Every structure is written in C-alpha cells, then in structure tokens.
Image (cartoon, rainbow, N blue to C red; front, side, top):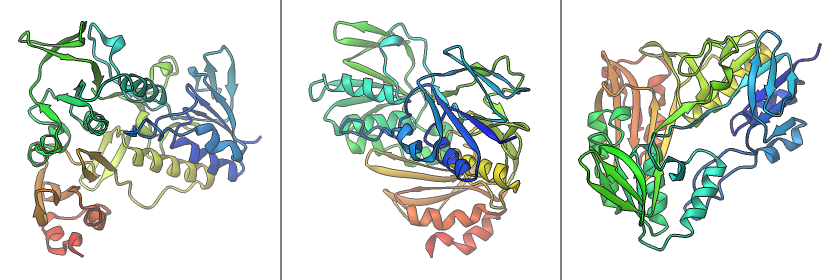
Length: 390
C-alpha cells in the first residue's frame, strides 16, 4: 500500500516538508482553514503574506484550502473536515499552529489582533482610514506588541503600548535582560506604559476607551491586542490523543506511530544541555526544524544527530533582538565581549551550565556562540573560549 500523508494546517513550515515528502515518493494531501498564513506585518501594507497554494503547486501536492479539520480518527488515520467530507491516509501531520489569545473585553469583537493573513488585511484596512498621529492602543508589550507598535510608528501613527508587567519581556528574558531593553521603545519615539491594569475596553465616541482598574481611561481610535497565543487543539478533543498545552509527542514528534505534530501545536520533550524538559515553543525556526526532522525520520527511519537548538529573532523599535536556546527567566545572565547600549551579547546559565545566548544587534557574535549549546558547556569554559569574539 502506498504511503499517503495528510497535512492538517499546511502553513509556511508544513509546505516545504510536504514538498520534500512528495519528492521522496509519498502521496501528500494538504488542508488549510484559510488559503495562507501570515509571514509578517509590513509597515507599507502587508505584502509579506505568502500564498501557500503557490508554494506547493509544482510539487503535485493535493490541496484542500478554505476548509478546516473538525475531528481525527486516530486508529483509521482519517480526518473529518468542516464541509462534511473526510479523508483517510496512512499518516497524519498535525500542523494547525496557534491562534491569538483574546481577552474578554466588552469591545473584543472590534479589537484587532495579528496572527493570520485575514488579520493583516483587516488591520491594514483599518489603518488606511486613520489620519497621521492617530492614537492606537497596543495591549501587550511582548514581541508581537512591540513589532506592531514599530510598524504603526513607521506609518506615522501614535501607538501607546500598554504592558501589564514591570517591563516588557521580563517573563521571557528575565529581569536583568529586560532591563537592558527597557529604553528601546521611548528612544524610538513610542510611548510605553508599564504596570498597566486593564479592566475593560469599550467603544466610545473617539473609537475606543481602554478602562483601567483605577477607573482611568485612555481614548484611542484603534486597539490592537498582543496577549500571547493558544495552540489550535480543540478539534482533537475526541481523538484520544494526549493533549496538554499542545499535542504531546515523543522524541520523533510522534503522537502515535502514524500521527505526528509539529510547530506551535506540538508539546515535546526537549533534550536541552541542562536536562530534558517538556516544552511548546512558538518560534518559526522550531517549526522549520520539526518539519525537516519529521520528514527525515519518515523517509529514512533515522533520527537527527544534531541537537535541536531553539532560535528566534525580533525586529522592534529599530533594533534586532536574537536568542539561541531556551533559557528560563530565572537563569543567571552574564554580558560578554564589548558592551555598548545598542550592541551586546549575554550568556544565560543555570547551575554553572550555559542554557542560552541573547544578543542585541550582534548577529555574527550570536551565531558564533551557537557552539556553546551543541553540547553541555560550563559557563567558565564558555567565558574562556569566548567564541563570540572570533
């Protein structure tokens, strides 16, 4: 019997995997709820959205776009679709990604988020109606919120970023590193307000009013929310798969022998240099690495030899933040090499072992430091070797 693989969520990272599997002789059918997924928000108007159908058109991948999956029969590897049809195969890849987390505000239906191509279209349509210097409230000062605020500022608008924590990214990068980045927004000309307690967002004569728990109000013509993301797993509720903050998979990204999950939707055991830990990581590089590793495993039966090293970057407020590894906010951090306000590298460590590297505007030094995460490296040895200085 030929091997037929169904991709549920044929997004930017699933498409290359599908193409590689077709080249290896597999029969592949891809399903996507929308025609494409967002690549990035472009300040000029969203030209970065990719057409996934075009990316796989030449690879003889059968596509079903605009129809979502509603259920999975694991035993028969059969996927139920929203239009009442179902497709059976021999293998299934769950790549449904994640969606924007939405807070329960009164005006929630009118608040914009940024996760899909439709979101970009809606956002740009709303932005085109705003006059220069119009106030846009951005709820959340994390990566999405900061990147949105940067794009809004570039369009001549006046974003005000409302962050609940003492500083943006403190829950991701830790107290010390987040303090080094605290000046990026104001130096770029974006107003950042920390320790904000939002009680509600309502419609007003100005457009919207952000209501705080002390009854203060911020009037804005538009509100964009960047409050994190949730894995798209609801359609698997009756599948029998283990779902716990994502689809739980093994070291080969398999939930069962013939069902796999990759990217944002997968919760996997990551063998980090400081010990294995269960993680779900919402980074493009992880999704790309997952796709490549699963394709290799299904094509050859061989597990990758190289360690999986998480990587992400964020362009915000005219600066570039990059990080390798999956350090905890509580890890120790040591800045190394030449340190300047707008250019530095820092090493995370836990119990004397390197767990990550973070950099501001230092891409070469960061990538040279990747060697520190390819095997367990003591912090003292890392400081002695100083690969970032090569």
